[in-house]
Image: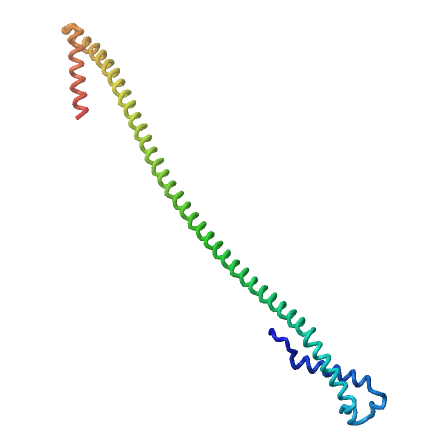
Length: 200
């Protein structure tokens, strides 16, 4: 599109304009009816041809290069705009892809955090259960110790009471045949035997 010669359409337009000018410049007798109006007269043809050539030379040297330059500049601007639009589209696609990758990475990280939190919760739950079991076992053991101590104390108190009661009963039944110390020893021996039988 960098030619400096006018195209066929430009030449036809210029020729039409010159023919119209020559018709307007012709005398009134030239507007006769019939086929003569379409055919140029030899006296009018030469000046019209000279005028056409002069105008064509002026257009070819002055106007046509400016028109071509304007059209080329416009084409370059359009091509530049298209290239910029294509570059912007590629950049937008690259940004969209990077955004999608960041979103996918964030989702993977969120899944990892959730899984880690679940694992920590399970470990904490297991620790709490184990600690509760240890505490319950300690409480049960302490309670058993208290129960055993209270039982031993009660048995000791009960044994003392039984011994005293046995001595008193034996004194009344047997009389003074045994002294108090012998009676106590006999009662304690009897209680020991009964306790060993109960343990069996």
